[in-house]
Length: 301
Image (cartoon, rainbow, N blue to C red):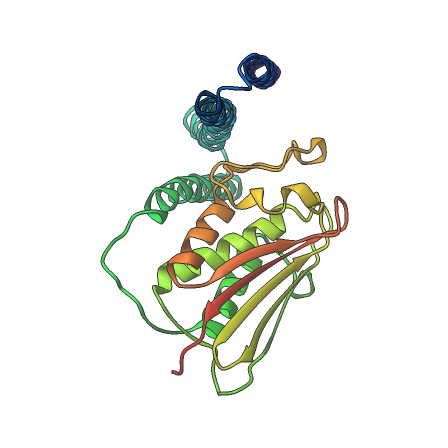
């Protein structure tokens, strides 16, 4: 309901802006026809007309952008609320069961395991929000030489364990040229967060069949490239650049069941830029999988 009302508001402001522009054009053309002999007035009229049109365009663009930003912010609030409420309700249910009923030791241990999983999910959501808040902040430089190949390998193992994936579902390979290691200069924790977010995103959007290939390359002495390819739901061409924006989530019915806050890839982009690199996505369309590439400057270890 809110989305449809906002779309109507966007349409209203666009139509209003177009009407004002047409009205301004009509008035200016009429004024020019009536005063075509007055050269100075004609020149000033054209200048003021251009300024009026520019102001109308800027005003309309600003209004539309703010409406879309508010829509994304509300979607983020709803997503975070759901991500926090669901595990809390689950933990509460298990605790109430343990309090009111006598359960055997095996079931008790299973309840403890499930509650620990829910707390991990809570911590993951909180960490995402905190990292997103820190992403744009400048803080003391803590960069050190990092073996990026080893870091990526560790992140792959963590992803396999946390998502309960067999080795063949999440494959890792590396091709290191022009040296013995793929070194980068950076903050290890931030780099680990970036790689983990790319991997988690690939698993999340793989659907029921998880088939992810992770490859680390050093194409030359100045660049380290991490490529994560999945065979999942894919990304529409018009969404490829938008997915790295804060709070943005792909607007597709097929993805309505996918949980998330819309912050993962935003964090990846912020960390990549802070380390002098970049990140981009490629996809042949919906249902054809996607490939996310993280590029960072290389250093000698």
